[in-house]
Length: 558
Image (cartoon, rainbow, N blue to C red):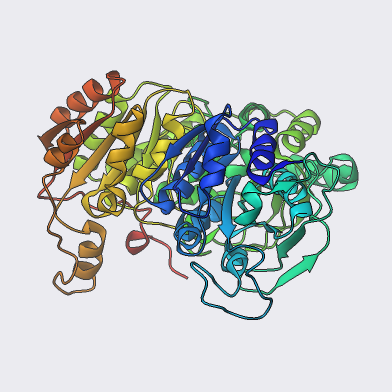
């Protein structure tokens, strides 16, 4: 027997967790006490939403489990935007929240206890893969082990773990011998009721390749018969770069990557390096007589709300069904294994897409905004190859999402799964503590204010990151939307603080420059070279023009 908090921390340590993000409350202090003597670094944030975002940023950068800790009721609820983003982006994060004392809970009755809800776990149903609830002593160890297992099992998504606050300090059975005692809830669908059982949902390893033999041969036959194959690589392929490169090389097929797959073929002759929202790149889809989608559900953001036409033949490699387009051959399995099997079997052809890709790039770049291109050049100048760039929902962030190619995967993070404004700065805390290269977040002035209190966290924990704030005095994208609709700006202009002075008040080095070109790039390079936390403000009275991958500028319409 051990205190419930110690049992939970032991399960986290067993899973290799090295850092957790959280905010304490009266209900979860016993968990803080257990973490005090553990091997896990506890980073105290200033808002629970940041705990979820930072856990997501950590998971995206490393592929490992991100952990967010909250107290009961409003503390748990504050994570929902961040958990929704992690769900849409398929990040393996675990949210651990307390609930009211087990002895005070009365089933079916609301009693007005501090932080009580009628069903706290129900709030998470639309945005998690599974929920695990421990309201009895015998359920704690099993619920913790099962929640961790579910979060890490492919296909990954967030998982919610709830424990009654009194059980953190109470002695509970330790180890995994009672793993079936907890109650697990698996969401049936977004907004659907929870289906409860007395055991955890099955969560084994990625689906095996063995059952694919017939479908695999069918896919190979279709690929070999295609004259103009195209590879579309999504976030599920970001750890399968070598396999995708080998397949693309044998086929001589151009490769389009989604935001989540950025960097998988950096420098490869088959990489287009442009989003399909740029019309010359989008025409590659139209010209293809076969599309091989690897690790992508062909979502609305990437396909301009499905305005890309149905290809003559579509082969999908995915762990989950692809329902947005008609799939002719579905290969259900882990991207690296299935793609390697395809590469082994397809017939190599004498085809080189470089000339076609060069023409696509030349035509697309000729139509792009010159100021934005200088901004992208400044970013490339300032960031080394191992840097992690975290972009927000702002015009500079949209340019980076579509037109910045990192040197390797997991080096560009964007919140375009769910589209949560205010993501970049708090999410950047995660990769900054992951032990990789330098980390830069890029936010607009409006988005940065969502979590500006985390300057205190960065200063206190000495988190090595550079926060960039592009200050145009308002929500620039929304101003553009209003102008495009023929109106004048209303409700989108913002009073902003002196961001540099704000950072300096926390003891963080700060600098302000004008514009986003050479002066900005030189300043950013200095900040990135400094391991201490810093803030760089770019004043842009004339904001960037939104890129073609923003919905008002999509060239396709449904």
